[in-house]
Structure formats: C-alpha cells, structure tokens
Image 1 (cartoon, one colour):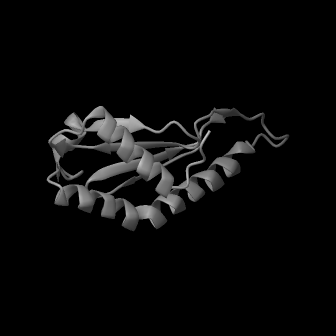
Image 2: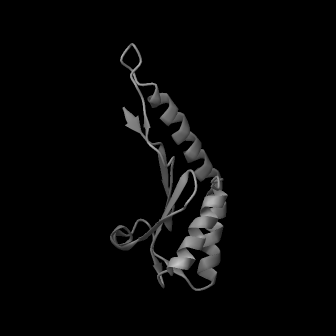
Image 3: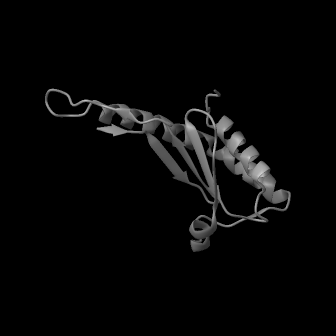
Length: 126
C-alpha cells in the first residue's frame, strides 16, 4: 500500500488543502494490516488541526483583500468549482489554495497569497 497524507477545509471564500507532498509505500504487517494507515491518519489529523487553528488569520487575509476591492465568489456557488484558480506552494507540506475572485488575481498576486496562507499553516521552507 502507498499513499500521501492530505487534509482539506472548505471555507466561505476558498478551499485550503495540505498534502504531505510524498507517497510512502508500506509493506503489510504479518497480520495483513498496513502500518501506514495509522501514520497517515495521524498526519492528516495534524494537517486538519493546522488548518482549523489558522482559519481566523486566513479569513482576515481575505477580508483585507475585499477591503481593497477584490470580490470573492462563495465556495457554495456552482461557478466556484467550474472557474476557480488553483495554486500550490513550494514547500513541505504542500499547501494548495483554490478561489474565485473578481477581478481575477494575477499569477504574482495569487502566488503571494498562497505563500501567506502556507506560512499561517506552518509550512516548512526548503
């Protein structure tokens, strides 16, 4: 069995995902169970806790952007899933952010925002 730990949270204006960024292959235990199951569960729980504790700061970033004139489509809107922008950070664990804004964020603006969110989530730099 192999896998990568992953946790996501749908907020009102974005979707935040943390991923371990690597697949780990696990050999079975003598009883046929997989030791990775518990490992991935613990890592995913940690990711979820990091996201949950950072929600106020993430929401604050979006509030500031709205004050500057950016308008976000709610994640509950069907247009969100069809048209949202996606970007990932370049650290470990990987942080992915999906959002839909008007005006659309430039690549530099979006990369900067993903970096801020990654820092809030405690992403380790390379």
